[in-house]
Image (cartoon, rainbow, N blue to C red; front, side):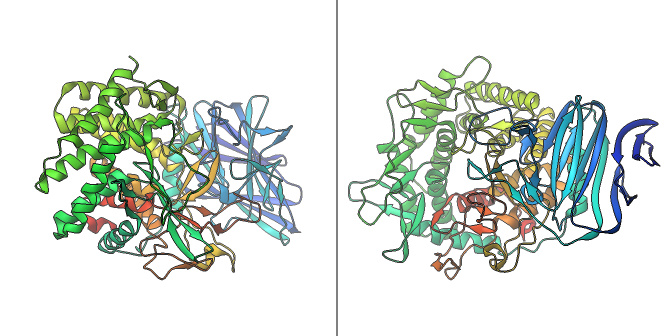
Length: 617
């Protein structure tokens, strides 16, 4: 435990750890600074002005060279991976980035490592400020700024908008939070920040719906999405789209095996529901969907189409969508995983479906055949099996299906390939400190690609018994936590999110290029619950509940109305505009006219993996 000490003089305040100067906090004219200890290496920095002022800047100057930095959920050491609009480096056009408090997973948080020490600066939950981090002479500078500003330009929906300059009523008291921790591993000191922040902001949650209610609603919603055509093409529509002509939601014409559409996992859900309830219509629908994919999607290369297009009829086309000619690891890996599961479930239903086992095995055999000696797979392939895009951690979805292939067949080749592939993507993560390319509508650093890597780490542990994989899983889970909202944004009266009573606590940001919130965290709730058991750290169970709490908000019972659109039972908004994302006037808004379906599918998969549902009540 370090011995911390504050020294103050006319120039400002200095923080020392074990007698070593860590950072300096410059004084502000006509202001007095005090420091209230709130935990090991943590203080509430209170600045009192002699008279109210309408702007303030509270700054930290580091003494040693910057070695790693982060703005949680927004900027990871400069975001030097991927393409498209994202916050890169410390700024642009000669100006430092400023980020609004609500854009960051911890309010207005910046984190900086300087070798052996890390310093974090962030704000209270009520917000109202912005943050900035930059470099001078190789050393970090961190700041909180009032009033709220964003610039020199503002990241919108994968593009740039004008900067934002807010105003505030004059105030005489400003509060910042400072956290300091020793760093034992470069780029991992933020784990201690996250531990502190969780304890500081966390609160009990009351679940909006029980697991049983969610199952009932998801069953109804899946029935709404189900589409059976005369030519034998059967599937679940990937989304519902509001059509003004009919004043109702209509199914889109695309069926997708994984990612947004989740046809394979939904079909398995119907088989599971048959086994639980005896409802033969659910069994028959699940089998028809799986049979249709096995018949219509298989390709000579060993791959499969990841999307199918149904004849229009009572369906609607979105953006003249066509079958993609590039086949991605997210969809392919998900397909293999659930074909293996479908084979097992069909047997429990009294049916022998070897074609399901073959679909999964063929996909995994293709992965083994094309895997590099290092264990790297590709992100996407063309339909002939040649590589389209070679890089992206999203291929961990395919890694995960190799573990499933080993469990389904017992063949050692799948175990060896799964471990080799996991080790590649985990080593890449450990080296870079981030995962990539999971959000298929952008190509950047993100959190979605870390979710299957976490699940694969625990599968590797169960298969090998090597506790190293538990440590890997903990590291991956901490990274996922940098994308999770630790606090509740107080949305303004009259806003859509206020009216819906949406709570940002436990939500997750999509990616570095896509700063909206979503309920994706429900995917890895089972892994967080398992980590609580394996490590004895109850924080993971608490966070699993927070992720679940967020992910089951605002699910329609058939009467939910948003923007005059009546959502069908089980319907839910995918994305929440908590910050300046989309147009600058769209903060605190939701997009209600395009209702996708992956959220409920993830919830049902999670419930199928969790034995004790009481943990989620």
